Image 1 (cartoon, helix red, strand yellow):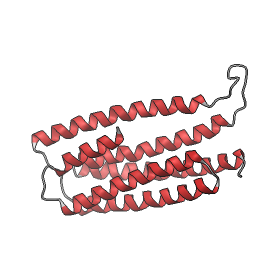
Image 2 (tube, rainbow, N blue to C red; image 1 turned 45 degrees about the horizontal axis):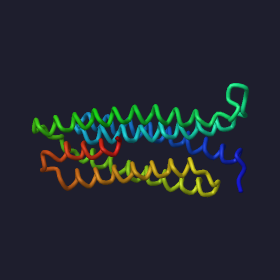
Image 3 (cartoon, one colour; image 1 turned 45 degrees about the vertical axis):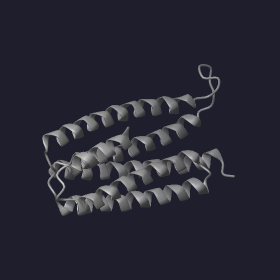
Length: 192
C-alpha cells in the first residue's frame, strides 16, 4: 500500500499536468469555436476547462488533507475539498444553463456554424489528447490506489468522448444547419 505522501505527490503530478494540458486545449477549442461560430465547440471548450478546475480540486484536496487537525479544525481539513467542489459545480451549472439557452436561441434563429476541417481536426486531436491523459491518470490512480486521481481520469474520458462525438458529427453532418445548436444543447447537458 502506498503512503499518503506518495499519493499526494502522484495527485500533484496528475493535477498540474492536467491543468496545463486542459488549459491549452480550452484556449485552442475556444478560439476555433469562435472562428467557426460554433456554440457546441465553445461549450465543449468550457467542458475542457472544467477538467482543469476538477484537477485544481484534486490538488487542493491533497494539500488540505495533508494538514494536521488544529484548534479550529479538530477533525482535520477534509471539508475544504467539498466546499471547493460545491463552488465549482455551481459555476458550471450556471454556465451549462447559459449555453443551453444560447443553443436554443441559435436553433430558433436558424443560424448555422461555419464548417471547417480545422474544426474537425481540433476536436479529433483534442479527443486523442484527452484519452491519453485519461489512460495515464487511470494508470497513476491504480498504481497509487488514489481515488481522486481515478475520478479525474473519468472526467478526462468524458471530455474525450464528447470531443470525439463532435468531431464525427461535424465531419459527417456539415450540411445539417441545426446540428451545431443540437450539439450545443447536448454538451451543455453534459456540463450541467
